Length: 301
Ligand code: GDP
Image 1 (cartoon, helix red, strand yellow):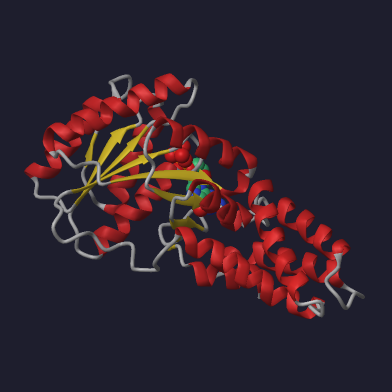
Image 2 (cartoon, helix red, strand yellow; image 1 turned 120 degrees about the vertical axis):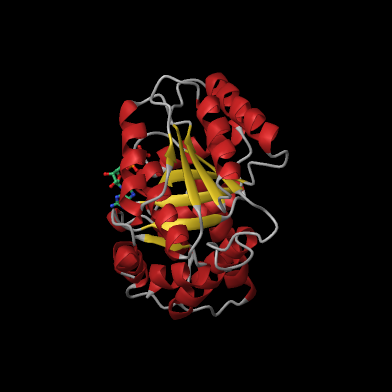
């Protein structure tokens, strides 16, 4: 797991420094721990929650030593992640009864949306699935071109109408094409802008509506892509998108470039949406199914 190396050493080192020379978990240690969690982008609310839980455990056992803090913290973070990420199933599996599975991908420009879609398309293609991509992020020409380029790279068809067409038009045709070709999954790239909440909501509502004309219970999944290296921005975007539409899964990218993987813990806790994938680099293979156990380990060892 080369990708998570950075969050690893950094977090662990800081905790080590915070408890250096101390034998018992006192208020100073807890204060320091609170600072470390906030600095790691866990977010204030989730940090307070974790600290409160630890405080209770420490108070119940007056003899809690700093050497036990590592284990306790690990358990609390694991418990928190488990609350919102119920299983570590192979998330590349598609439900057998749904065909095509319609996956709508949302997120602001630059977070790694197109790259994540390309990586996903490659995974599905490699596992023998028929994939169709829809270039419905029509606001930016580069976004459409990039998706077409990914389609070429991983050899899957891309439905595109160029730019300045309403995203719903492309989404409609992508699903239509998916049905026509007997695709297993249609992945639609959409909504790269966030200038006003109302626009975003209207746009996504329209996209949902036209997709339902083909398949009433689609989209089957709405995945929000967030850049894990942007800390508070990622939290803000999660807030905006969850207000505008029902987000059902998360992909958190660029965790290779940050020492602050705590954003995964905070966002999963604050928004009660499971993290499905993490991005740990720019290459096709740099997408991992989120595994809470591995994640906690990578944070501490
Ligand atoms: P979009 O505008 O959201 O579609 O973003 P792109 O997919 O074009 O990605 C923006 C930049 O982030 C590109 O240079 C990608 O190569 C890079 N990128 C995407 N995912 C990751 C990741 O997990 N790690 C790193 N280091 N870079 C990434």
